[in-house]
Length: 150
Image (cartoon, rainbow, N blue to C red; front, side, top):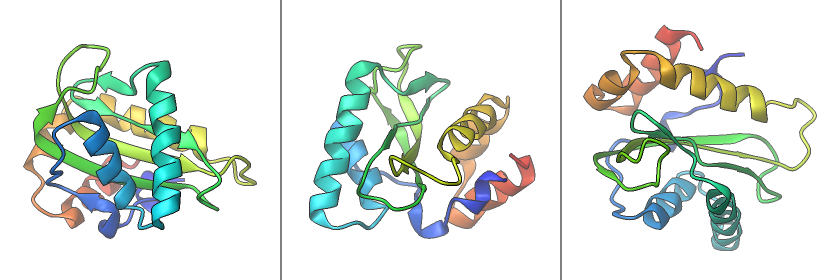
């Protein structure tokens, strides 16, 4: 299993517009192209998860994630905010890179935690934050995932 299998270029946005944590979450949800009701339900679930503790893992990276009935298979999206946003990350620094993961409550394939782990592993690689800043198009993001082989 490799991360790039779960991402698609149309769920990658390199210039997020949002200025707040809520704005960013809404924008990431929008990349999944669900209906308005599903968007609202997913936003509530992600907010609930964030209230337990920020998914900002440090080094400018956040991995908002939850399980929800609004999807029937694991869905992921990536967004970048070059100016950064206060996401209440554990290192108390701004977050620039957002990996959204949404999975159904029950998955036969059980990919939710492995994908979360692989994104965390990818994020810990020394050159990843700098390389993510330099990307100019979604295809380069996909190529970076492929190169890292996570």
